[in-house]
Image (tube, rainbow, N blue to C red; front, side, top):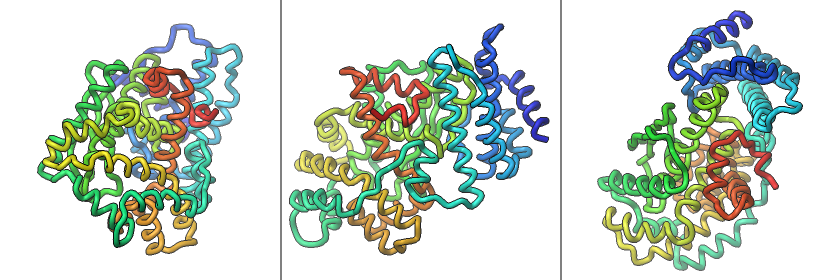
Length: 434
């Protein structure tokens, strides 16, 4: 049955039209041709895992017929584990000696993503991993888990910035309440933020002429924003409006989900690999994979890249505050608070490790999240919901941003050039380390 399915996928790949990957050269090198066949089988593997775990496939814009085949008769989890092992064996047998560096990197990229798929399948079959082990197996990089006391000095700095009675979380919440965007003004504020993020991005990165997105507000989600990449340079961006959205979050979300974040990343990958080279493996995005470390890290770093220094604060004060009807008198103080809160980002790795391992209960975990992320309890409970759903995925935000930033800045003084290189590549998390 597996041989029949693979044969059918290859036949469908030959006649697919929407979109059709670029044709291989008439007389391809044998190793490239072999890699192309493996890449098609990799796409089949990822699509079938998506049938076993809803949400695993974050985006797919390859031939619709391939997805239909995966839906019609997906392999069982044990069969998929064996399928991943077979792909690894085939990739290891491909010689890249004397090949173009891009082909060498392609093989490494596929090996890393098949390895992550295998790890996710083992998790689906019941295998338990520690937080750091799981993160390394899925995303290709190992986080450091530090004692929570590591971040107490940061909390002390915030306490000094916002002195007064009550808990520090309550004081931060009360201070930031002055910067909540009224719900009836969310649309114009978000529109303005995304437009500015795009304006700053297109000055440096050439985007497909037909790139576009739609924006909508939703609720009852574990996340604050999500980009659903649809292919053909189009995205659907959703913003969770259940909890207060602050003015700086409008910039964060506009950059992270849009420009130069997820929308740009996916559009460039589609153009560079699927359309221009016909490398079909890039037509599918498995959420629990090294791809996400680069995606989330670059999306978070993209905020700093688009709004360096105090430019974000100035844009909030001059554009977003008037649109939201807010008083900008303490904008600089809010900016200092944001810088300090950013330094707390990795505290939740330790909190998640304790929670997911069962060492700490739910109420204590919410209290810890509230203390070390300075979120009110209801917001901390939402974050715990995210951790329950995505587990070690959370390393891709703070750690991902820091690793991406360091790599981009090592590439030279023009940081936008480094960012474009990253967003148009098959660079792996391990490649970003010094």
